[in-house]
Image 1: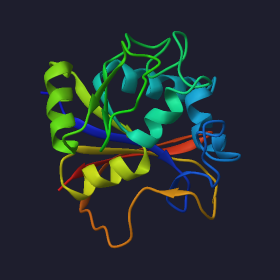
Image 2: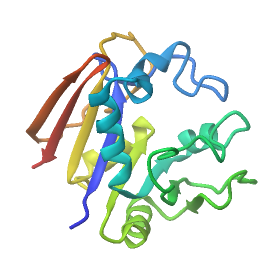
Image 3: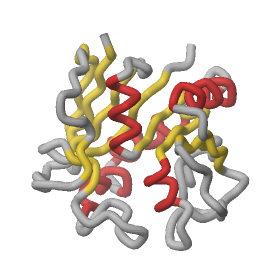
Length: 195
């Protein structure tokens, strides 16, 4: 049975990007530390990444993240979600208004009628694989706050950023049940079930 999984890296103080996010700095200025685990040569980190991308049948993201990955220095035929690990899953972009152009048209479906609609389209496309909500922080936080996810997979980098894009908006409350914790050189990987 497929699940909706929020899968995101963050700092110890709860930020999914450093300050200064723009087309050149998708993770903020010096925010790459959040994803060191995903580019590591460590066997456990490579296995965690491979397992996550292999189970992904569809991906959901927000407009801010889309604008970064579809920018000229963003994803390419060689770089993207699952590149080098599994077949590229279709990506569904939640936005209030469609972009004028989409550079990687074959990868993205633009969804302008809400988060639940994007999740429904992603479920249909995923088949028996999972739907992964990968970011940004606003979309992940909305999915969790609305109770639309089955699982939260956090990759907590050993850094305090002091600012950036928070995973949760102030006042958000989400009840979670711990499932597993794996420590690796570049992150603590925690999995929770939503109650």
